[in-house]
Image 1 (cartoon, rainbow, N blue to C red):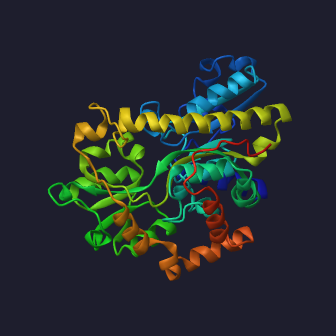
Image 2: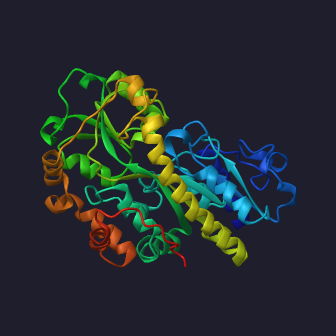
Length: 392
């Protein structure tokens, strides 16, 4: 068999595994969900440049909960380039799932994609470098890193050099622990002791597995698509995710309590193939970055709105919000409660649990990643969001 035949066979195997069409990947009509792209997209026929974007499981419906900023980003790109660059969004899981969006980009099937960094971790191990449990005090703090020029050295450049992808922007909240219906009539969960032994569904992530172990919970990796039934049937007692993701996929109906430990960033990361990006002229690259900057601000503000109006975990939840309608309780943890969780699950008190992860990430980056993240967090602790153009 020739080298060309071997490469072709390998490509077909990958496409089959990812649930994509195995033949004709260069033609948009043969990719799921894209059959009408060149006629559907405004001004697509006149576009000089085209990018294909696998938006994972994001849809225009759950976007009302998630506020990833993806659709806003695409609109801004079109406006900023006067239609010279058109981005085809393939959403609703038609292009890829959270665990496969990385490979579809690195294999050149799509030019861009989105996924949570934790789900990317199995393909791009360094993607979880920001996600140390109990490190960030708020979503403003980790978003300030993504907005900061410091993110180039600490995150973006490592992702590009190691995996050939460039992180553009992210939007989301902080990860919480959500309890299933068996806890509906139980006291509010306010301490790690109340979680001991509970079966918690985790994203397939070393970092979150270590976190659950620090609380003496039993981590159970379970596909997101299986979580709803897992909670309903009692296969798992709890799950970790962020509020917009929980309600965006209808989980509120099988949940009883949100324990807002806010232990780790929970967000969708949008990234682009370095190969595709570097083929673009500088003016188009600038437009992509500017649209990313605007989308991250848009997503941040959108989350605040959604927390009250749609999700229900905000300070003034609407009666029509998911939490209010389903009876999902948001537990009001006080400072003493949070300090107890910090003591039990903080990195400083669990160095042995995280030592292998720390060593691996530091080896990839060539520096002590945890120490660098700690230093940056200390510099922004308690501060409001401060958007900056990180590439300028």
